[in-house]
Image (cartoon, rainbow, N blue to C red; front, side, top):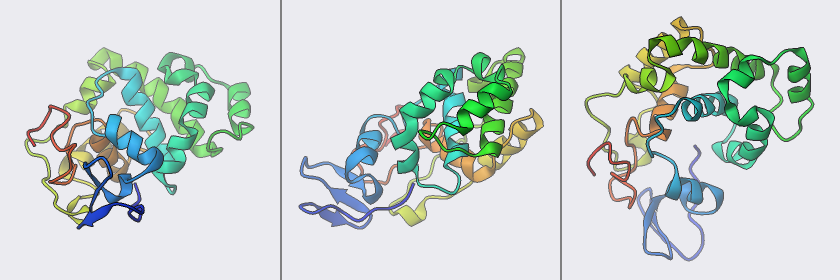
Length: 208
């Protein structure tokens, strides 16, 4: 996610912005769609198969783009990929790939579409080993970062590297360590809310 300039009418304290509602947020989540995402979803625990598969898929499509772009297209992605039901996506063939490549509402990238289909099949195979969500959460670290500034937040960790390698061994694609660290942030496995943000500790996984 990319840092944004604070909007007019708010005060900035380092990398935190104090909104008109009196709540402190990081600068990237100061307004608009990213603000709503930060307030309601980012960093909250996701422990179901479909939810984790969706976010792995969207992290792959986000590579090289801004997260705001993905959020704007998220509903289109959900419609295009059968609400990210792994059984449905794993059954896609040439006709479905052609449909996706013609869909201007999503990111039309052949390799990423192929990875989404491949990863759906890999998700199904993981059911014999506890399932995707349990597998991903098994890489939760013993400690979480306590960043004061955005520059304090790592882009990968020993756990995200290990998760990346483990998923690749299970047949997943587009699951590099940086993508997997972003996934871990997004679904609450680590808490990288800045100290001082009103959302710090909101997941219930880690103390504030």
